[in-house]
Amino acid sequence: MNGKDVKKLVVACDAGMGSSVMLASQLRKELRKFSVEVEHTPVNSIPGDADVVVCHAGLGARAKASAPDTPIVTFQVFLGDPAVTRLVTAIKNGSEFNA
Image 1: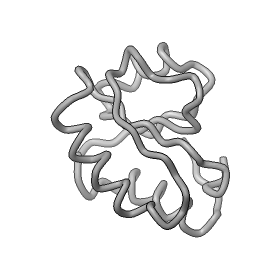
Image 2: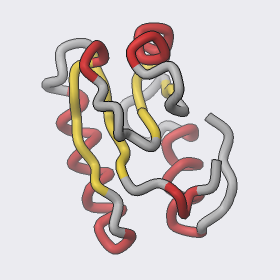
Image 3: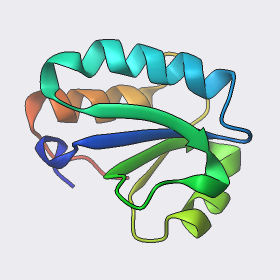
């Protein structure tokens, strides 16, 4: 997928609160100049219009079941994870990334 095609990024976590709110806030700040909508949601309620989903690796299978046709980017560390950094860089540069 190309980063320039991401218009809606969803941060999903187990209950849709706490850690996802913190990460979503950080991503909103980083991507505000790129017209990317960032929202947070419970992993079982991922909206169908999400272009990409970001979630903890432990929730990857549940995210894929909830949004089977949406690219899922999983991470290990909530802030500063290399997978999330690669996604943000791809969005900013309009380059390819692998989910």
